[in-house]
Length: 193
Image 1: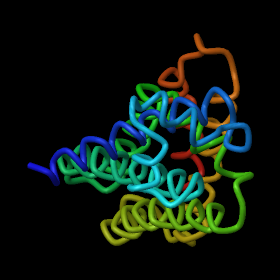
Image 2: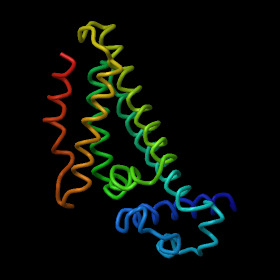
Image 3: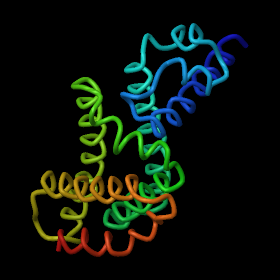
């Protein structure tokens, strides 16, 4: 019971941190604000996280885990590797669109938070790149696409996806990220033949 309460408080702190980081920026955010938003004490925040950077790192892990789980569940519905890659793209856009605050933290705020956070983002992007690369490798094996450097293609896909999400996250709230799927899908599929 005590562990369940601790996990619940951690989730509240992470939700509060996402909100505060999104509105105030990582540098402008204070642990006091996060505690207030989470309806806990500053000591309660420090009990779970040693500082603001640890909160941001945990938030990035949480966001990446949420996204990865949703992408893998959606991909499991398909057998064709190209369809799996398309589904992954669609699911990333859908999840980010539904969690704009997290997308803003991930795309905008985390990049300037120092080398440890930057390394975390690179690791997360590499994990997603490997997921795409694996599907492209299977597509080549199945003869669905011709031989290409799947590592470079997957990194290019991630770069394009990041650019689209970054522009959307920095733009007006009424912008619709999911509407980018069609043009983005066409561009990415053309890039692999």
